[in-house]
Each structure stands twice: as C-alpha cells, then as structure tokens.
Amino acid sequence: MVTLKQLDETIAGRAVPGTTAPLPDRRATARGMAWFATVVMVLDTVLILCAGMLAAVTRFGEPTTNIAGGWRGSNLSGVPYSAVVVMVAVVWIAVLAVRGGYSGRTFGSGADEYKLVLSGSVLTAGLIAIVCYLAKIELSRAFLGFAFPIGAVLLVAGRFSARKLLHRLRARDQLVHRVLLVGMPAGVAELLEVMRREPKMGFSVVGACLPRLSKDPGDEVADQGLPIYGYLDDVRSAVERSGADTVVVSALPGRSSRLLRRLSWSLEGLGVDLVVVPSLTDVAGPRIHHRPVAGLPLLHVEEPEFTGARRIVKNIFDRVGAGIITILATPVMLVIALAIKCDDGGPVLLRQTRVGVHGNEFTCFKFRSMVVDAEQRLAELRAANEHDGVLFKIRNDPRITRVGKVIRKLSLDEVPQLFNVLRGEMSLVGPRPPLPAEVDAYAEDVRRRLLVRPGITGLWQVSGRSNLSWDDSVRLDLYYVENWSLSADLVILAKTVGAVLSRNGAY
Image (tube, rainbow, N blue to C red; front, side, top):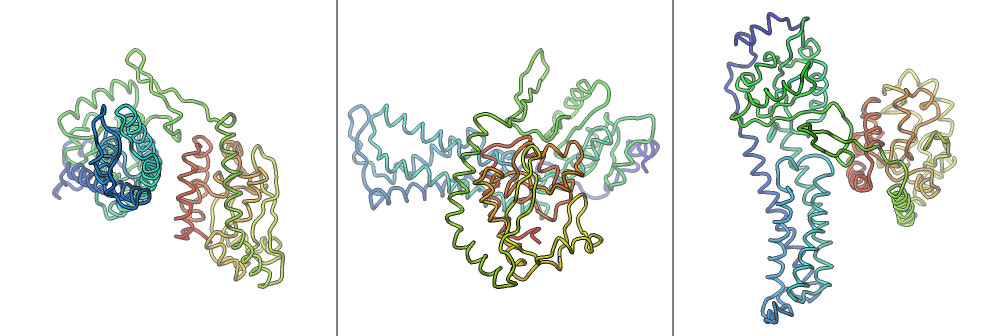
C-alpha cells in the first residue's frame, strides 16, 4: 500500500526507487530511432533500385537502353534507363519522407505504415506520369507498369522485415521509450496493463505521478510494482529523477484542460514527448476527425459502417478471394480428405452449427480433426478446460486424431470454411464464429461481435489464437467490428500466413 506519507517522502526525495543507479540517457532512444530510420531508408532505396532495374531488364533486356523524347523538343536519347531508375528512386524516397514514412512514430505497429508506403507509391507514380506528359518525355509505359507494382510489393515486404527487426530489438530492451504515466490511479493502472501486455509498442513504464486525493491513492498501481514519484505538480521533477523520455497522460481530475496545459508548460526544455490518451478507446484513426473550434480540439467520431458501398466491396472481395483460394487449395483438400478417411474411416467433414451475422445460425464446415464421438465425450473433459471465459480448449485434447494433430497445427482444418464464404455465411476476415452455447453466455457488449460476418481468420488468429485469454479475444474482435476496413483485411490476411507457419497458439 502507498500512503500519503510515503508519497510526501517521495516528493522530498527520500523514498524514490532507483535513484542510486545512474539514469539512462534520455535522448538515447531518439538517436536510436533516427539510426533505425536511416537503415530503413537505405533498405527502401535498394529495393526501389532493384525493382527499377528488374523492370528495365524485363522490358528491354538490359538497363542501358536509352529513353526517347525530350524536354521542349530537346533530345534525351542519350539518357539510359539505369539513370532513370536512380531518378525515380530519388523521387520515390523523397515522397515517402515528406509523407512521414521515416518518422520514428511510423515504425512498429498498426497498418498505417503499410498504407503510407502504398499511398506514397501511387503518388510517386502519378507525379512521374504528369511530369513525363508535360515535358514530353517518352518513358516506356511498360517499364513504369512493371517498376511501380514490383517496387510497392518489395517496399511492403521490406517494411515488414524492418518491423520484425524492431520488435526483436525491443524484446532486448533496445529502442524502448522510458514512460512516466500521469493521471488518476484507475487510468494509470489500465495504461500500465496495456503497455506491459504489448511490449512491441516500445514503451517501458518506469513510474507514475498521481493526483492528490483525500484517501490513499495508487494502491492498484503500486500493487503492480510500479514506483510512484509524486503528485501531478511534481511531473517535471519525476521526469528528471526517473530518466523518462515520454510522459503519457490519462484522465485527470477536475479542470483537466487547465492541468494539462500547465503540465505541458512545466515540461518545456526537457526534450520529453508528451502523449495524451483520450477517453475514447478502441476507435481507429479513419473514424476520427480532428476539428478545432474556439480553441477546443474537438474529435468527431463517425459511426461504424455495417452497410453501404464499402460493405458491398468487401462482399465481392470475399467471394472472389475465396473462389481463387478454393481452386488453388483443391489438391490439398483432396489429400487431407483421403488422409482423414484412411485414418479411422469416419466422415471427412465436421458440420457444426455456428452463429453468424445478426445472430443467424448456419452450418460451418471444417475438416474433422477429432474422433467421431467427440461431442459425447465433451462432458467428461469439462473439468480439464484450460481456457477462461465461455471457450473450451485443452492443449493436449485426447479426442484429437493423428491426422487432426497435423492439420490443426497448420490450421488446415479451417480450409472448408471457404465454402461458407462462397455461400455468404462467413467472410475471409472477421471475428471467430461462435457456438450457440457461447452466444447464450455473451454479455450485452460482447454481442456486438455479431454485427459483422464471422471470419476464417481475424485479429485473434494473428495475435495468438488459443493462447489469448477470453477478454483479449473479445477485445480484439470488438476492435475489428468497430474499425474494419478492406486495407486492414489485407494486412490481417498477410499476417495470417506468418501466424500459421509459426503455429503459435494452434492446438
């Protein structure tokens, strides 16, 4: 327990944890992220040059072919395409830099980085096309048609690899921001839980400052082993004593706007980032619009979109994507079906009743990975359940067959759900399709999962699958429901490949 007396001693400097150890350099992380951004820029440049050279070789057989046309009638026939590739790379990198592609805040998490790379690539292609038209430079359209799609794909792959490197560095406590949390105890405790749960964010919490309350504050914070450095008017001192380089502010008491303004003034000159956490959580950027009115930074939040043109596009994407994948996966499905039949002679497919959009039930198809009487043996295994909430999961379930162990590890038992997508009952990406018994146990807010069609894969699939707690699964599904987009679906589909190959949480 943290008492007011102990907080007063902390303010006086007599009870501050860790003050005997030398504090880290506050600007070390900023310099490290600048170095990382330089590495990413070099990587992007190399990938763009490779894409350009490949396009030139594909179109002309060699990159030394000269371009045709000129500037206002002048002859540029002596300029080889190898030089054009270099100029395209310079423009491409410049566009990405101007759009914030090498800012330290861009790296690490979310789909925004990939969106920025793709939109920057489209903008670069448009700029070059306009310049060539106005200057009458006759660049080969086939060259441009090869260079930009290949370059965009390589850039996204490069950013994915760079992100994995950043995550590994952060796992070793490198390129991590030292964070001081400021706000009400409940808000600080919630932020602490999130930042500890998501180390890939790159935030290492070193302490907290809490408001002066009539009762002992901070018990729920101190119980998690977090040092408390003082009150709200001691933030500057706390930053200096903790070596923090980032101050994250959650809900503040009373006139919070006035407190926040004074807090920002007190931090001037320290070179510390100030981050404010809005009360509105789990809402992604595309639904939020900033509009200052009379000095107030108002946030306009759009309603989630469950109908309309975007939904129609998603339906088309699902049907076409499922059709293509089904054709490509047909040989694999035939091999799996034969293996299941030869294993125990039972049926190949498992037909289960699941709950879809708006609570409508449908028959979900899966390859049978358990013994034929698995449902009848469920009651005797209830006590061995290793999952919390309404889900039932056992890591070494005795009902799983020999073939079932293999196809579940690789998530191949889910492949027949492609037919559910073709029938319009499921989507390629969405929340996990629940059983009717699970839906009956849902709380009111959890039922929002049923506002969209369930998916073969989703945020839960790429975030740990069966290793997730029930609360984390619900949180991810609700986040998807509130913020779905086609670009986010593409990112999730790409991450699914890695999740399946890593077999993390698959059992």
